[in-house]
Image (cartoon, rainbow, N blue to C red; front, side):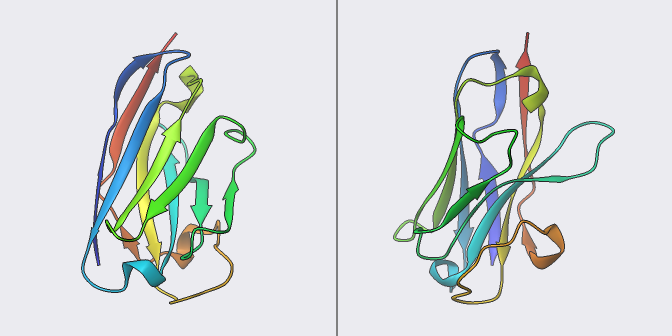
Length: 126
């Protein structure tokens, strides 16, 4: 599966952005999906995950209550709605797919994800 992330940009603190990740190829609807981010000089970190069905989601503590992950399996797309953005949210955001089909639990471990998008840059100014 190939993943294409989009929707990043430059915004002021407090603004919102919605990232999209479009998948090509088969089996998208059976993959758990995740969003990760990497800020300059920092390691990549988990942001949010969603199960293949969409019923189970989870978030890093730093974004809980501000970000929402969702998916539309009919459109082969996963989204990350980001509200109340802060300067510390500045990073390159990556979507990723866990190839274990119909896995009941999404994972926050990036090593479990085999497929990665190219990343989209989000810059939040203060």
